[in-house]
Figure 1 (tube, helix red, strand yellow):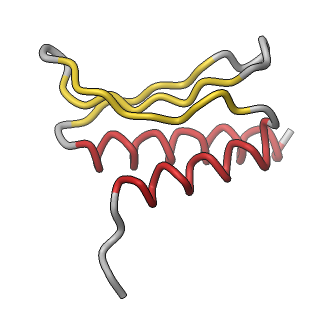
Figure 2 (cartoon, one colour; figure 1 turned 180 degrees about the vertical axis):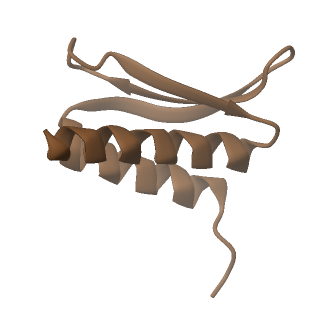
Length: 79
């Protein structure tokens, strides 16, 4: 199997968010000179707003965002 690309990770996060939170505006990446890579998921609903994570590499930022979203879903399902 080929190694996962950032595009694959973004699609995975998008599906995860869409399945749990509903309307997703976008999931993306950008480079910030002082912080490093920043991954962001933005939602149409006011309840969630947006979620961000950062990392040294773009893949690290996306992994951190995915893990953060999974924790939120796990916590939500536990209540």
